[in-house]
Image 1 (cartoon, protein in one colour):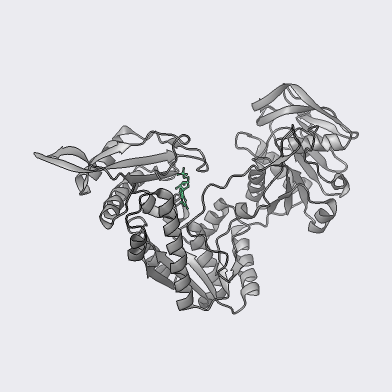
Image 2 (cartoon, protein in one colour; image 1 turned 180 degrees about the vertical axis):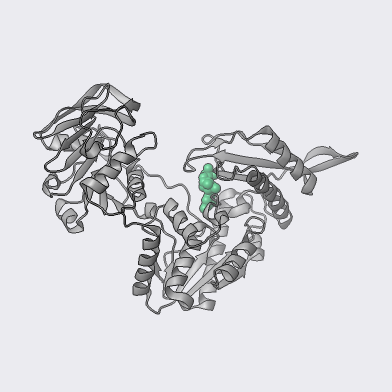
Length: 515
Ligand code: XMP
């Protein structure tokens, strides 16, 4: 294991993901972890992340100074390097010129940390402070035009620092550097593989659950599907999968999911068709948040009923992922007041989230995985690409893509229009290039003409966006021909629609969904 002490960098998770790409397990933990705790954890290496502070800020996060003497190799990144320099007696000052963006790395010592890193390679910088005096015993491994200490080392005690961010994609030589640290300096073996993960989690689930019964709510996404597969392999018929069909999924999705599990994976799925009661629960409701609230509420009561009917169960399986469990980094410090400020803002609660007072113990075999690792596991166990690469889909589903009141008729129209959007996006091979692509139905009518007939029908909005994480997004610049094709097909094939418009609003100020 390599542990990452998180000083509040937006890249801490990314460092962990890069290390895991080298097939070495890596975890993000709080910078407050003491040297004694670290010694007990016994990692093969430690990485200190970057962070938003300056080491000389009042209240800037410090690590336990005893960590330098643990005898474990340490790599400080950006703030992490400055902290190392500062605590060990060197000097860090505000730089005359900060360095942001790409910089050419000039290598002074091509061995050790920088083996196989090309001289002149691009590394990505983002710092306003620079180290001007090294602690005793340290030497410079590389510099850039603006930064004399771009990479430093104390070879005897295996303490290393880099001013740039090797973890970001723009750092061309970054992965080579990370591999050097992980394999050569920390002496790690590449044992974190998909196969090893599956084997280990199956063993852990068996040990934990024994012959008790587990309930799982299948949603159709890659997380719950992978979870179902792992648990079924571990405990067989002690697992019960329930799929609650709210009636707000995309066309064909519920049938496909159930068929896939039953016929291909031979995992029984309890299919609960609850579409009537969900539709009744939001009849006449036009306010988006009220819709969400009622759907969430209905989900919980349906789930509770199913669990009573099929139970009793001892455990509830949840698809919690690693980013949900990372000890959240409340490490941002306001430089003026010295007060800590929260950095992470959670955007949405999935409607699949269950109430705390359902008296179950939890089993969460995916809690060590990042999303891309879940995809890898999913693929390895044979989930089809349409589930592995599924675009994000909101818990309340199509109900928040019909603006205003949701009716069976409107659902039918939207479902057909949405299917055409997906078919054409797939045909163009664009499904994985866009973050989300879907249709929205507006509860108004406009005039059109078809043949010699005047029409008066609903408009459909196309919403195609690109995004990294859903927090910000841009409208996708897809070919006009594709838009034309989608528009023609929808107006011709979907009864009740006579107009198609394209949403060209970015987020912010718009949101991805219309409700
Ligand atoms: P917005 O519309 O806020 O969406 O830009 C950002 C991302 O969140 C998804 N989303 C939801 N997911 N329940 C969910 O599980 C919801 O109520 C919900 N609302 C929006 C949206 O699809 C996008 O990926």
